[in-house]
Amino acid sequence: MFARSHSAAVSSPSLPAQEARPQRLDARRDGYAERTIITSDGVRLEVRDYGSAGSATHTLVLLHGLSLTQASWALQIRELRRRWGNSVRIITYDHRGHGDSTGAAMQTYQIDRLAADLADVLTALHVKGPLTLAGHSMGGMTALAYFGRPAEDRPVEPQGLVLIATAAGRLAERGIGRLLASRATEGLFGLVSRMPRRAVDRSIEGLARPMLNGIVKYYGHGIADATTSPVHTISLTTAAGFLLGLKRYDQYHTLNSIAAKTIIISGGADVLTPVAHANDLAAAIPDAVHVHQPTAGHMLLHEESELVTNAIGAAIGSADQSAGESQPMAMELAV
Image (tube, rainbow, N blue to C red; front, side, top):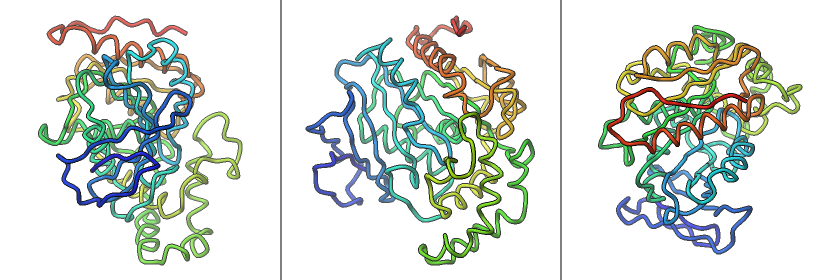
């Protein structure tokens, strides 16, 4: 994989990883550089890189949820930049098939592949030293899947982890995620994967949209109806691929091996990832801290933006402590 600025020519995706050299973007926008990372399977990921590796003492990577984009972290980025300045390098990007990143084969819309994309981003941007991962919903699953990769496939070992409205698996067993247990999920994937891309939206709108809108209806406050729902930011092909990927996703076996200082945030009104998922995470990840907001829904980044920001700040501060410290995190998460 490799990185390039938007003004540079696209190089061959087959370029060996050891030759990857991220290029500096001539123009900056609102304090960040725009970069394009070409993954090991040739997908272009659009990245925003706040700060620089030279002046930063810590790197934070923010991972967005299904059908959202890196822009969903805007409130956290603004406040974290105000608090930490250039001492923390913040990296965000659009997952494959989302936002300004390119799409890919449906078979690659799996959480394990998103974890590989994360590894590609860390490698291409030469991330070193202390690292914290923060993931919302599918982004949290991506972070967990990264921890589940063999050590040699993790280019950087995270010291901090913030998991927001997410799960380690069993999505089809709880909440509205039970819709994933339907045979329609497998059937939808098979139908879409065999059809020409242009024919998909016309041919399966009636089949796919009710299922997708049923899930998005409960995404959280601020999503009033299907016409403004975040599902409309991705194609039906992408949505169908990831729905099957979520159904098959399982990282329970990874949890007890996570050594990163971990904070888990859940909402009592979240029917996409009910609190039972957060309870499982907190019970299995060593020394994890679980913060529960009884009235919040799935979109905690917006509903409880200050709490999420404080949790990320606490994780960064804790991760920067001496590596040998084994005491629980001391955090100020009050809002």
